[in-house]
Image (cartoon, rainbow, N blue to C red):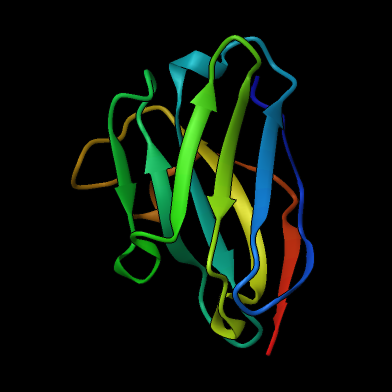
Length: 126
């Protein structure tokens, strides 16, 4: 069973940085690819970044390339999202998710992820 919990959100000024973490309380973390999604008020949930089970492959939405970095530590059952050069439009609730049947064509699809955390709020002020 996967049990995800995000942390690290908060309020930051534009241009600043935040590091989000997601911990899995279960015992099968390394079996799953992990993704980060976000949802702003009045908008649909959108893909941010994903990482393969081993951590060897990463995927990013175009709007975060060069600013965000996803990483994972399978020994610690954690996945992180380092967010730099934050912009007001990055304001959203950020969710981590786990999926066990993902490939390069499906990492972006929230419907392919079976487990979700409760989300953490990120607010970027201008």
